[in-house]
Image (cartoon, rainbow, N blue to C red; front, side):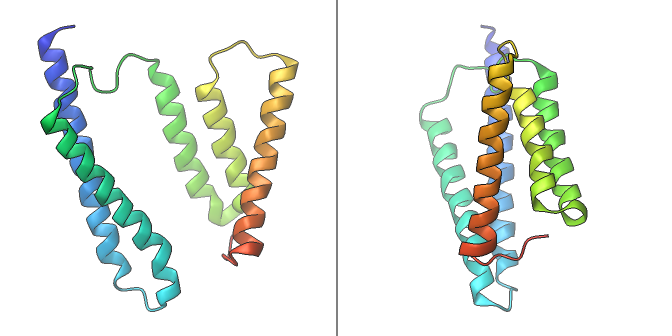
Length: 150
């Protein structure tokens, strides 16, 4: 591995870590303006977790730097597809609802993650398990946690 590539990878990882650390601080600050204390709990927990884990990542990067090239080798279109499908799902959710938006995210993530050959069996297993997971999350949020969903 090229030394300059390793340095670039560490620098890129550092930039991403600092970005998420700042995003956690901004999210935590934003939750202070919520009038309902019940609606503060989940965002504050996630923001604190983000700050905590990025802090651990920063310390780890300085104490024991990795020799890897950051994101490593891979197929770029899979990464782009995953990000685009997540953004599409977020944008579509207010208009089409939780479950259809979940299908968009699931299909994009499945196509991005599937490296093996598609067979009828894998399609049935993955689609079936995806439906079970999405319905379970919908049921959990809508009925058990009483979260208003679009």
